[in-house]
Length: 498
Ligand SMILES: Nc1ncnc2c1ncn2[C@@H]1O[C@H](COP(=O)(O)OP(=O)(O)O)[C@@H](O)[C@H]1O
Ligand SMILES: O=C(CO)[C@@H](O)[C@H](O)COP(=O)(O)O
Image (cartoon, rainbow, N blue to C red; front, side, top):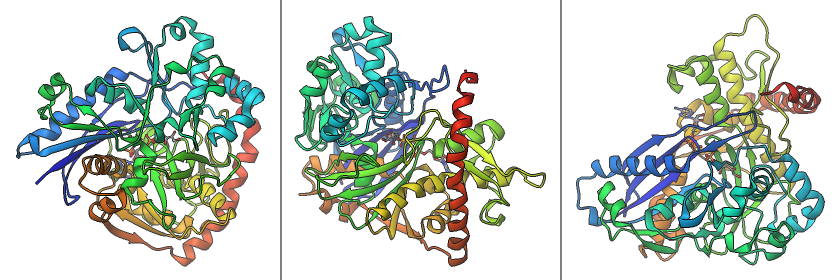
């Protein structure tokens, strides 16, 4: 039996899975790393820690495997998107990576939008937002000019880890699409945008397809991890592109819901000319010549993690959620908006912050937990509404990410989205998508669709419950009022945030 490995470089942890030729997950390992948040709005990570934890995770994965490591034919990657890694001479890292959920770049976004926003929307198919890579590059150029001067390349997070495992520098289209520097339709770095903002185009890495063969493992990485030095490494994709592959979103039939640190509602796009006018993001898929669009809740799973770390640090998620299924929809009149780090869809607003509304003396901790979980799904429902308004049919959702571990949360998705919600056998959609890219790249299958037929297995399904659907429709309308009514308050509080 042959095997492939998918490495998912998430925001909270790196997750590795070993998958056999039938698509069965033979081993899994996870290694966590922290976010560095020195100020409100700042979010960084140490790229060296990504490499260290990836290697530790692979060591653990290989130790669970009792076959011949030479049977592990290929490795590929899924990675948190948009993060900026700057390399200098000899490819050393020049500063900590600035992540997708870092919102310090509002002034740079305003400048880009004012000077070139319409052209960028036309070329990159995306609106200028704090999370994307171009504003981060401009922030470094303005605030750390000596770092910018030394830059020889920028890389996206998983592309840096792949570089450290192979010695080869590349980017691939699905992740490059999230930089605002890529011409999405032509699949090339855009000289016009680079010139406009005085970014030397040669700091942009060479572009390849997601399933492209990059090289074999460096011998020291093979020695350390226990993998064979001839293990083939394939480029990989953005975590949402890989999530889409791993959940079988290879046609417009299904919609994806991912609850990781962020939350995503994602739809396959077969027409590259489809124009949402920047209301949702539009990116190259990991499947060659295809595209997807998505709406993003910045702090989805992260809101629940924040609540747990702050009020129930030593409990598991399962303990935290005990009793919440007995509480009625709407948590006895308590609502939560998940804007801990600002928001993206439908409100591109970096200064909005989260709120609990409706607290009264009868509320217990479990009401707050349920309200947080409901608020996250309400926020994702805003993206579903956009798709429905644009004429898309959303009737089946494939749900992935850490959030898909909870059946109560999956039922809440079915009731709030008013759709059938289906769970995968392994909730590690992006990791499975990465493994599928390795399997396709290694020639096991003639297409990702063929691979999906073999690899993807659905388990439970959750159907909307009529009474809950009615209640949640009413609650969603009230939830939508919170943004409008807290926007000004959030702005006024900005001066008091550290
Ligand atoms: N047992 C669980 N039940 C429900 N949600 C969970 C559970 N464990 C983790 N989560 C949620 O999953 C999120 C992490 O998901 P994951 O897909 O691993 O994120 P990332 O890819 O961003 O690192 C956490 O923030 C948390 O909200
Ligand atoms: O910024 C985005 C997508 O545009 C995020 O979805 C990141 O890609 C991080 O993903 P997770 O770690 O939450 O899976």
